[in-house]
View 1 (cartoon, rainbow, N blue to C red):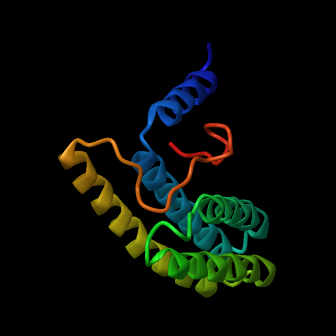
View 2 (cartoon, helix red, strand yellow):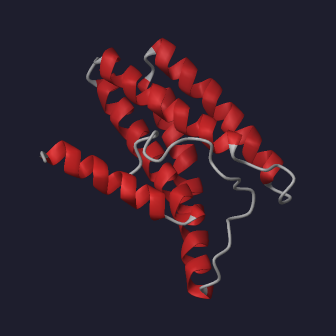
Amino acid sequence: MNYAALRSRYVDDTVATASPAKLLTMLYDRLVLDLQRAESAQRAADRAAAGTHLTHAQDIVTELASTLDVQAWDGAKQLMSVYTFLLTELIGANVSGDAERTAACRELVEPLRDAWQQAAQELAVTSTPLEPAGLATTTRAPGDLGVG
């Protein structure tokens, strides 16, 4: 088995066995990584690479939005508004090739990622296996969004 196949199996196993809270933080981590890579590619005038990363970031935001139960908690509707805004901005950043717009998206996502990571850590301390509020079961196969 080659390195790529081993890595793919590891990622698939990691995603398949991760708790909902861990999956959420993995998605946010990958979203930030995609935005960092897209911004770097835009600054280097590599539109193709930037487009790949921004499209992947859009896929992640779409997945986050589709799994958000807006009835689960008071802030869910506002979070959905953030996801909708992000999608619009990511598409605009991709079309325009605007690294500053991509950077603004990253700056918006990073505090959200940090908050979800803190919530997941606090949830782990309670040792009660609960789903994070507002996170429904995903409809995608493990690894589709490249987490890991």
